Length: 224
Image 1 (cartoon, helix red, strand yellow):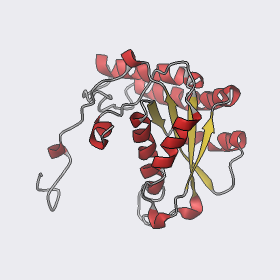
Image 2 (cartoon, helix red, strand yellow):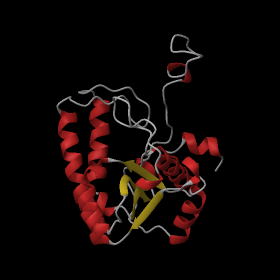
Image 3 (tube, helix red, strand yellow):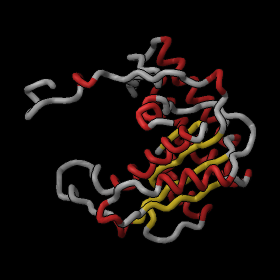
């Protein structure tokens, strides 16, 4: 698959077929994704491929607890969703927002059935937290791991696989660490569900805000 095509056709997959993913395919995904850029080429990512049913169930249960808390806020209107994977603008109470939440709720309830769960960690001693002194949460420190995560998502698309990224599991890191035997100094960065998508329930075309909405020339006062 051509790169730009993959970039425009990598939705969050919420529905997966009940069949395994071949290890050789996953190896190709990792083999290509590893060429992501990282600060100092330190490649601080680590991935646990979870296929054992009881471990998938345990991870799914931890994720679902976090999702329920988020869903409750969303249903009450405390969380505003700007758009779904088809690019539709949404406000709470609209049919589109309800549909999106229902799809994601289905995904969370059935996460244990997804054939492969990739638990992605970042090794803290590889991070350069250049914004640590600013009066806001750091967004730079773990940045290098997400270039790798995006490569994983694109590689899955190239292989005909569906994928879905969530970071909700990070709030459950102590329990996940114990479950997976994570080493000291590893920070849970992402959970990626991977499998063969149910074709008729996949978004076929993604839409996003136009370039002119988010790109400026020289300063924020001049639109592109």
